[in-house]
Image (tube, rainbow, N blue to C red; front, side, top):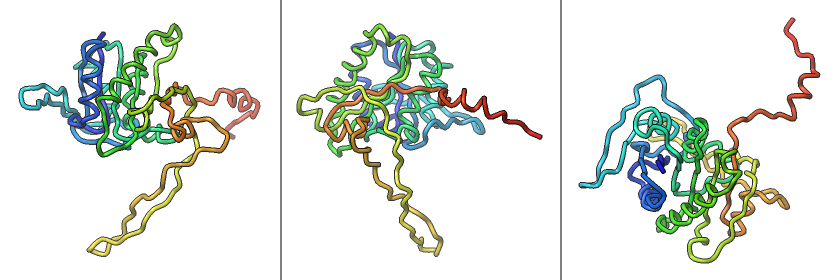
Length: 253
């Protein structure tokens, strides 16, 4: 199996290295990742400037291709140049969860989404933030879940999956729940400050959105200590609304 591995924390991130080690038992791993951290860039791509790419090494160990662009850039460039026709795209392990509305902001999820755009089974994997995170254990768990996804007969009909692992699940037995993405938004809160030259600037302070009571989504499942798996979609069309809107008789005079 040919596997393309990317992330949004950068090519030297410990989560990426751990995921590469874990994935080697599934096949040949090709790393193409951002040269520097790209957290929160969403599905942005570079098209007004050239994409610089360079092979990088840790001593004698080859790390892969470092791309001066977003995770989506990395996957797009890899499919065209560095890892043609991969069987699987994995993005992660991210240092921090990508739950709920964060899916829209996440560079990690965007890396997997770009793989799914090409019709490739793609998985984003995130681990709850911890300064001493055990990425190796999370990588083992992630690979086991990927194996089970690939074994399913229905898997070929869907290409994009989002996995989130709570820290507690690394040290004690934890169930896996397949749940929908929460859609409640973050609060729009900022700390207003002034720099030494008297210029105003703002620092985002909004906290993680709280799950809606009684609705079992990825946020609520995480709060209860579950590992979550969510099938995501690329097509954002609200199909139930299409038929209703066709009755509106919209026109331009």
